[in-house]
Every structure is written in C-alpha cells, then in structure tokens.
Image 1 (cartoon, rainbow, N blue to C red):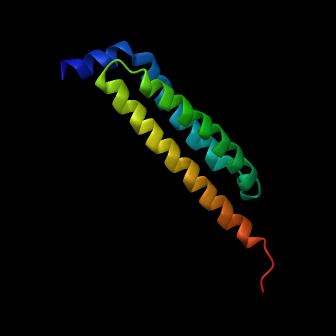
Image 2: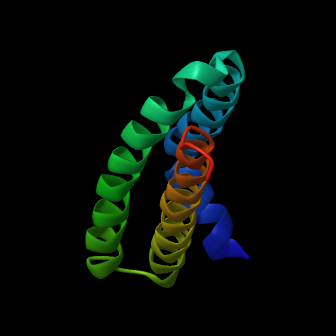
Length: 100
C-alpha cells in the first residue's frame, strides 16, 4: 500500500492530467456530428496506433511493477480502441454501399 501511495504522490500531476484529458475527450466526442464520425475515427485510429507503440516502449523500459502494469493496461486499452474504431468505421462505410 505504501508503494501505491508513493507512486501516486510522485506522479500526482500526471494523474491530474489524465483525468482532465478524460473529461475533455468525453466533451469533445459528444459535440462531434455524425457526418464527421468516420474521418475523425480514422484519425483517432492512427493516433492510437502511435499510443500503442509508445506504451510498448515505455513498458519495456519500466523499472517497477506498477509502471509495467500501467503500460500493459495502456496497450490493451489502446488496442481495444483501435480495433473497435475499425469495426465501427467498417460498419458505417457498409451503410453507404449499394444494396443488392
């Protein structure tokens, strides 16, 4: 428990920034019209591909178990986001194809 509290106190600013980014992201996503969804999703998939690579690099250089666990969680969530984005984009593009 002491290690967790020490980690939180050492990385307090980073934790605040992540929480703030979550709220800003939710607000931005709610404001996007559905017409722009597919182009923005493609851009988000590209960005999350970079996030996954960065998380893998940081996880490989981690010096404690907590950083490794956070890196693993970042890789898993980033991968889920990329795969989900491609699935949603594919379904939306299928809606515009001519029906047989």
